[in-house]
Every structure is written in C-alpha cells, then in structure tokens.
Image (cartoon, rainbow, N blue to C red; front, side, top):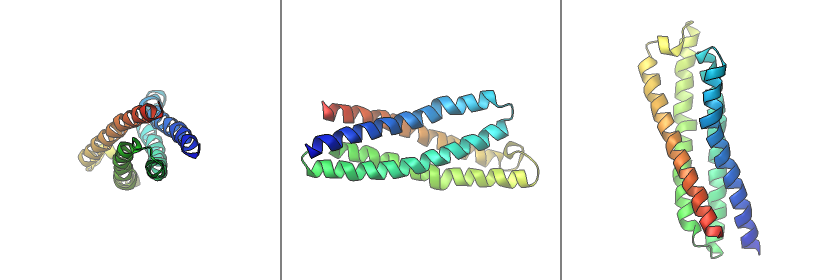
Length: 157
C-alpha cells in the first residue's frame, strides 16, 4: 500500500511540474512578449520566470529521483528508466539555471549599465547563442517531461 500511495503522489507531482514548465515555456513567455510593448522588459521578466522554473526543476527532479529510487527498492522496477529521464532533466535544469540564465542576465545587466539593450551591445551575438542553447535545453527538458509522464502513466497502469 505504501508503494502505491507513493506512486500516486509521484504521478501527481510529476504531472503538475511538467505541466507547469510547459505552461511557462509555451504559453506565458509568448504572451509576455506579445503583450508587453518593450521586448527588453519582457526578456527580463521571462528570464526571472525561467530562473525560478529552473530552480524548481532542480529541486523536484532531485526529489522525484529519490522517490523513484525508493520505488525501485520496493519492487517497482519500471522506475529505473524514469530515474534516467529525471537525471537528464536535472542536467538541463542545472545548465540553464546555474550557468546560462545567470550568464545572460549578466550580459543584460552590463548593457543596461551603459544605457543600451543587450541586443544593441557588443555582447549581442554571445547573448543570442546562449539564448539558443538555453532554448534547446528547454526543448529537451520539455520532450523528456512528456516521456517522463508517459513512463509514469505506463508504470501505474
């Protein structure tokens, strides 16, 4: 009974988490850029949201990895593959949240310090590359989130 309850909690937490970061990436962010007239302000707000999302993803992927390990120990062997998915999601979140987003924020802050937008600065090319890498990591995280939910649903069935 304890295993079944943990699997249900795992499923709910994973579903809410993946749904949340998908909403942020594919609904909230485009709305920010279309609703706010200033792309720089929209970028700052989006960057703050993505930073919070990355930190939450780090915490939840670690927590779910611990729960998956407990479930594997209790005989739910389908959660072995789920741990690998969570590990790659964790790596993406660490790369984005602890490396790319702070680096992009630093470039934006340096440009703002001299009174220009980052895209008008000499760091525009670097910022664009970092943004592209960050977007790619988010896309990988999104696809893995779908795979995670698919595997969890299959393991509960």
